[in-house]
Image (cartoon, rainbow, N blue to C red; front, side):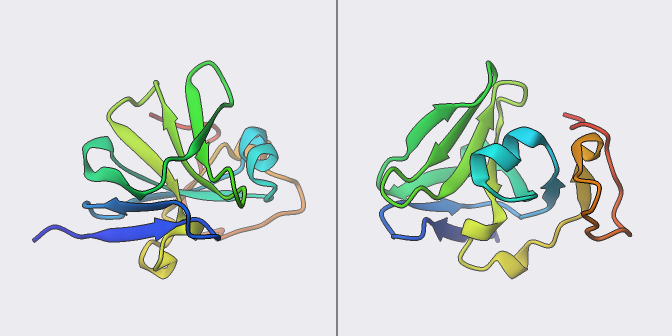
Length: 133
């Protein structure tokens, strides 16, 4: 039986559903995530693109690099998802926008070469200097 997960933005104008396990979950320390979310770290879950769908509203888009498009709510500003051409069969979702974020604990750190020197999260998790796609 497939897993069904849902999430959305703060104001409720955007909703999504994912019909896949939440297994690849990473704390991202890159400077682009910091600047686009306003957070010191962003935790992402990567899911198969075919398992993801918007169920309410359509997001605004921002091309944060030549290969990445970020999706956010134009009304409340919530950053919900990221698609990268470097991994065209997947979609990355911000864990914090899941209805049940506790269902997806992080299992690694990525882009630790950009980690803020005063930040320490889950030191028992494996670390990647960059993202290994």
